[in-house]
Image 1: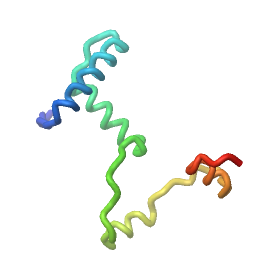
Image 2: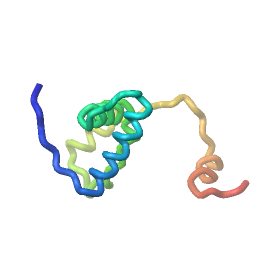
Image 3: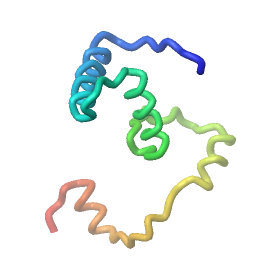
Amino acid sequence: MAITTVKISDRANRKLDALQARMSLRAGKRLTKQTILEQLIKQAIDEESLILLPPPKYPLPPKVLRALENYGADWGVETREEDIDRILYDEEQ
């Protein structure tokens, strides 16, 4: 297995330390930062909504646009415009 060093800020490292402590308590055994990061990466890949990326630069290259044409998921839920407005803008109906 190849090992890669990843540099993170002191602030992110403190948060990772806190996460490591909480997860180790929950698991009942010491978990390494490597194990926690591997699980976070796996979960982020499985549930893409976990990662908040900056918006893309515009205009998008044609190659990216073609890739996005087939991207998306039908959740099988009918949504009315009124529901979307209420959810997005916290409007009372």
